[in-house]
Length: 441
Ligand code: GUN
Ligand code: ZN
Image (cartoon, rainbow, N blue to C red):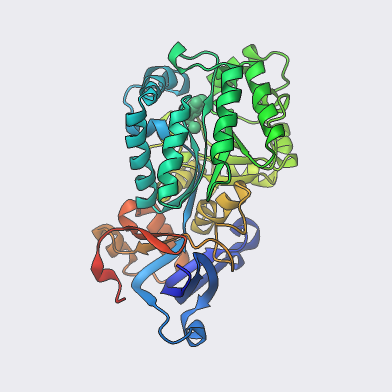
């Protein structure tokens, strides 16, 4: 749509990291307005100030008693694990992979199944107010074709890649370095930078890749410098010990990846729980990012992520659901878990920092600042309209909440998909909870 339109409600976003800038990082308007032109932010601010700047008859949708935030960004999740969330009896990472994950991912050899799950996955992201995600496919190129197809139909910004894995996994899930190269290259040529889609070279994690396979990943990145790289790093102590025995030549876990030239501005490492200061320093030097996966870390008992240490090392961090080790698509529920992880370490995670991680922090982690993550002029108009009384308990809790910090805290601790009233993609409604009473047009 090329005409200008606007939405009006309480609205907020972040222009900086609240950890370094405090509440000055927040822009908050109790009666705010977002003006959209051709799917991008034209203006953002106080409604009373902006209303006179609009041409007569500009459509304004007023979401009374709602709160608008930037679309949330899930920096690490697994499409083929959608149907196995909350797998029972899996134990910790390595058993969970063998007993629950690999059998489920095998189902993606069936293109029809892959298509059904990809359609569900994209809709579930939207229902939870997630407008951008960085996604692991399965080893099958079909998985990436399926998720990109559905994302494209919804004009969603999705980064995804076919998993590369040639070791320590069932035969049916193995590729070879040559096949991984050919399949990944074909997917890059077909999808990378097509509309809002971008490709990520995706070596699963060190134990499922030979050195040759990791080197092939590095070659792909050298050949296509604008594609992303995603993998897992230091999630579980048994995994870390295994990596030491598998790669005795490497000085530490990160070095396994560094030797293959996998570190860069568009490299995202999931977890990074059991990392050394030196590894964090090298991540920072290469401007690589960490995807923090709180509900996953608790569900498969991986450990407590030390956010402060990563911040001090100046590593970009984004929030992530890590479906299906993670137990919720909702990045609010992942904030809930992240808050408790910090509590257990004697630290606090403010709701400002939490929502920053879910929005601008994620954009920065994915090298997409200025494109998504806040309401700066020219940014893609992906945003979420939140219903602050979505559940009886939330409604009661917020009755006496007058400060935005407290409101946000309760909303993120208690909220989930039920709070998402509308999800907008490029300025258009992509998901609606069908409650027609919550705007007066
Ligand atoms: N490490 C390697 N593969 C996986 C995966 O699928 N999920 C998680 N959480 N960790 C992994
Ligand atoms: Zn993962």
